[in-house]
Length: 272
Ligand SMILES: [Zn+2]
Image (cartoon, rainbow, N blue to C red):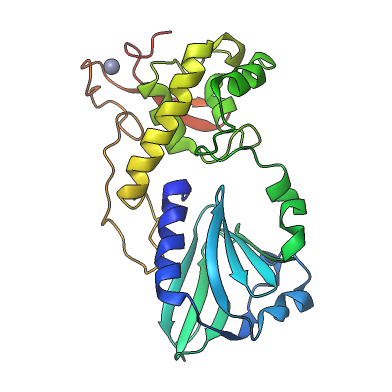
């Protein structure tokens, strides 16, 4: 599943290639991927890609008077190809652009989402509306987190994935942030101290920044928008390192399921 740094890489790559390109027409081969009304979605024709921004893990295409929202979920990818390429089985949406170019939305799992919204309605869109602060938002403070965490006894690992508190940490970086903060994934959220809340914020920013600079972490089938694989490898301390030794203390890394998601941690560095 692409995480925020990967989505940021996709955003930058698409923007660099496609800024100023006009969408001439759209072919939707899998209507279920479109969250908004399908006829309305066709309003994209004749719009120009002015900008692409990111809110959490949503890509937001700025198209003259409307926005197109795109969430890649598990396996969504964009490909930029020369016009006239035949659609493959997993190519769900074709955006025919000028400059002899097609932008193709491909999704083997078909869990992604595309929608259009009017410009003044962006923050009313349900998925955007309920999203918590971006990790870089200055409103994300230790006091804010502490107050939220006080209200729940769920495991901190699970709570870190709750995008309504603060957005941007998926499973990989939640594991890494807890390791960097020396917090055991099974700690109830209401037992996380105010100082540890600051550590969580600092480490989230640091780790996401490092991963973004590296172009995102390539794990499993994730490829960047141009279909490049394996080019970026971010140095992970615990995630997907089961049975390897901890780079800090030498203890074997443990992997356990917590609420259906793999939690990787070092039992010694994260004993509490
Ligand atoms: Zn360790």
